[in-house]
Image (cartoon, rainbow over all chains, first blue to last red; front, side, top):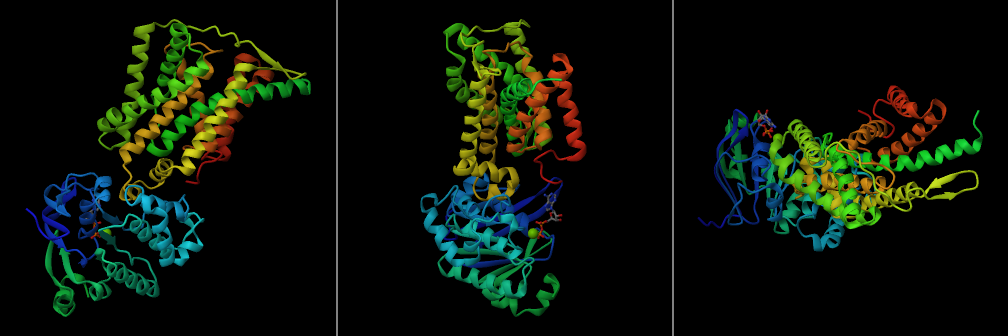
Length: 238
Length: 290
Ligand SMILES: Nc1ncnc2c1ncn2[C@@H]1O[C@H](COP(=O)(O)OP(=O)(O)O)[C@@H](O)[C@H]1O
Ligand SMILES: [Mg+2]
């Protein structure tokens, strides 16, 4: 089955041990889109991301990326295809320098353009440039988040998944972050934005899905969802 | 009690012995630092490598120091294959299983060696075994000097790999942040296997440095690995500088306590220092704070 979608997930089920966290997920992302996945704590947003990047195995359903089935591939192969997951909690390499962290982002992909991409990321994040020789573990939370995103960008993603990038950032930094996401997307990269920060996510997203009880309970144009107070109250605790 | 010349000679000799301890410990600490398991097969692999070096000399007349250039890559490949195709798949991603599988491999290797070569102890005769260099106040054995130099070169090479190559950086990344590494596109199974291979190559080189003056039998590796394990804990589990410095310190302590307490009690000093260090620094000399 071929579709024009960059990412096409159908009937995805996944979980841990006895618990099935995702109970039949359908989701698409088209090239150039920002798609938001929203939902309260613990509903399975990160599990969905882990399933897409091969960390958690899909128990049923299909995941197509760029026209190919990837649900049985290992994480490194999925990265090689250009599906890049910037995880919750940053997961940077604390014992290595900022530059080394970025370089490892191109371990598998875009290796030949490493230096050029690193320069580009340094010009996007001047703070990272200032701290390029510092151990990443010594950076502030905001800087670590920038580094995690920068490391993801080093692979020249076709689709970048951002898992709660605004978590723990000051309101000012959150503003900066969302502006950055819009800018990355403006350069043509598709973004899957997983957030609890509903208002700002809906402002920059084209479409959104709302996850509750292992399923999407709502999906549609971001503007429509933003305009529906009852829905936000019911599923997003607002 | 002892003249300074004797003390200095003992320290020198300790450093030279310690270098080979350090190399065995280095392999152990690498695997621990990255895979977070104690490789119980390390001793058996050392015995196997000693047999390989023995037969390379005995059957083919290959000098052990030259054999190192063959055995290091060969044992790297063995280690890689063990981890990639046996330990990894058999443990289904559970670290505790991985540990048990290395124990199983140790038993298999040791018994295979016993079956093939019996419990006999063998030695080789190389012309330089008893050569030494005269420093005026003491003599330094040539094989030990070569060993010290070789370990220095191996440590330097390893440092270069870790600091400058993508594979080395990937090894460091996997050691500290496995999920982050996986999501950066690093194939963790491959990196685990490379690390296990490097650890096994260390053992092969150690065997080639030992065999000119040492002996081989199917369980000879275990005594070394007990000391190496002490060194790894002493230096800090998973710490490469800790293994190197811990190895040298251990060699010197052994040599000095041999001097003061007599040869048969030499190793008691090692365990005394071991307990003392752990009382003061529970995570070892170079270990991260818990
Ligand atoms: N590694 C794991 N093992 C077992 N259960 C897990 C694991 N990770 C998450 N869970 C459970 O799965 C559910 C969904 O978690 P998660 O996907 O992290 O939610 P979210 O990202 O939406 O906060 C939660 O109930 C959580 O406790
Ligand atoms: Mg989450």
